[in-house]
Length: 87
Image (cartoon, rainbow, N blue to C red; front, side):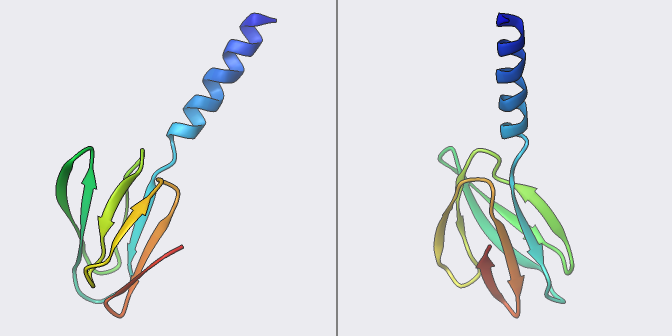
């Protein structure tokens, strides 16, 4: 019984940690997001048409228009026409 419970908890933990936010650039030019995770900032450049996963444990992201958003790791940031929308 305990082995089954431990296995189930491990499976749920593994599945839960597999999620990450994603960013999709639908524009014809490169767009950059600034990602702040664990106190460090990094630029995330997305080429035209590129999709990337990032931010598996939650982070803050600065969008192309300068807005700062908090992500939990399950959202999709979609960039189109130079405007980012979080879905």
